[in-house]
Length: 536
Image (cartoon, rainbow, N blue to C red):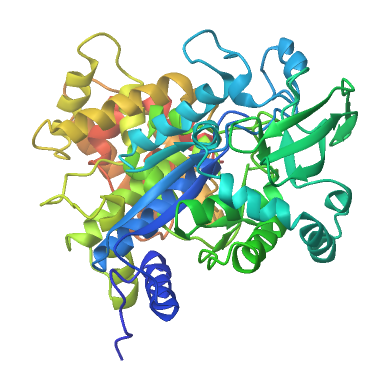
């Protein structure tokens, strides 16, 4: 029985539909439904931080597909203070610890007016590179504009109540004794050390005293200055425990996803939205964090960062979007080594979308087609492309140098009857494969292919026969190699098509490819044997 399909049949559609149902129950204006993603500006943005924005954009697309106007607000928290020096950054930044990143010089020269704007620009560049549409908001500009003054006032006038609730919710007692607001000390320029102890509601100002504090395990020295901060200017910022709620109300945000590392902050901000600001909190979904292959959290500060820029040196924008749109649940282990498989997986989605490959599971096919359309921003190509396995492109590009290398690879692919025209997409993929072959090919780990005893024997014999094969002018080498593979499989009672498929998997990480006889000649007998032996 066919299940009830919402929109394109993906998790994006389900979330968008849940949001619409909720908004209707709340009886709110649905002329435009805004979704939000917070952009960290304290370190190099990575695939995980990009994923937050891309997935929110996906929800916006799903809302548009269901007939509603929607836009993504990309909010950069560039008023945040620098808590520690990220790995690989200049050591002079130690003098700027606890200062707002929008007031710290650009650590990579003078290409941007601050540390914060440089970091924000990297993530925005990543979003632009994959054609994500957004409306950018800088926290510094937002605070300077004064539009937060009323919500800050609402929060600070009930700070004692808030302090008790925060303590009750998460056991944090910090705000029992001080305001959930971080002034910037006018003497030393630091956040966090300027402890706000009194709110002057009539003057819309906060009184503070600058004294020592701890950030993580590090002691940060205060300067003992006593002063006041105007909440209508960028002279301080709300604490995370309350700030989300303020911007949700100001920007009328209806959806925001979050990682499990900020669950407590989201819980408190939801309560503040409802009880203090009298604004229904956004619909949320929780996602797991991206981990590296060693199981460690990808972190701006520890340096195990996979940036969108690095990915796009080797993979297409579609491969990144597929990674981020495929699913939302479960922990994801990710590294640059995943580029080839995501490149080929996108081609698989396209083949299924256009019916070149068949899928008997209708539910799976609907989801694949839906994700494919979202990856293409609901503007899918009109026809299928000729697909060449990424690892085959990498191997071919590793054989050539010079300005005409793209043409040489194209002629090889044409010879194998894998392509018929030099399309823009094909040229792009060849160029990406050249980058991979130059930077990564020699350091790649071999894929895990489990071989049974008979397969190992057959491969060892094939390698032995290939090494002893004598090439002369009278030989039809390609046909001889094709025959040799066939006879080896029969001798070891392996179905020939299965043995050919195994060789494709070993050589190009695909189940099919060019005629192996011709391909092995071009790859080289010695190189072919070397690759096979790595699996033995």
